[in-house]
Length: 124
Picture 1 (cartoon, rainbow, N blue to C red):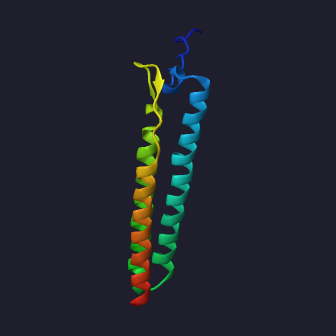
Picture 2: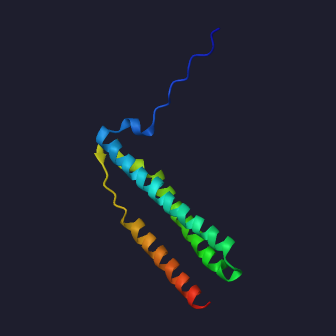
Picture 3: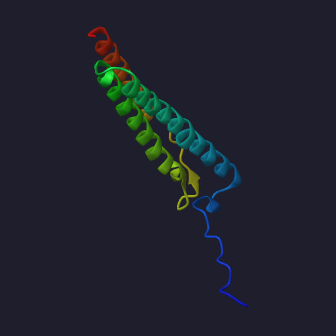
């Protein structure tokens, strides 16, 4: 019995990169897809615990954690989606792009979330 030939593996977007550059790209992916996602899941889990276990007065606190977790997840998702843009094959050069803007954005979001939580808790 003969069937169709086995399907060949499609080339990865990473196959065109040099071995060292692949290592850097995978490290970025571990950071954005791993650490950011784990932090977002932690915030979302904590928000569920607050919303389910505590009284209705704590609902805004759970909402703040929910928004913070969602923002953290989407920032990590968009950063992970743009990881392989560090190499320009037309010019045969690597582009060094820092995450300074993302760090500033996350700092502002975190500070705003913590100030909001502090105000909500002090008003209770």
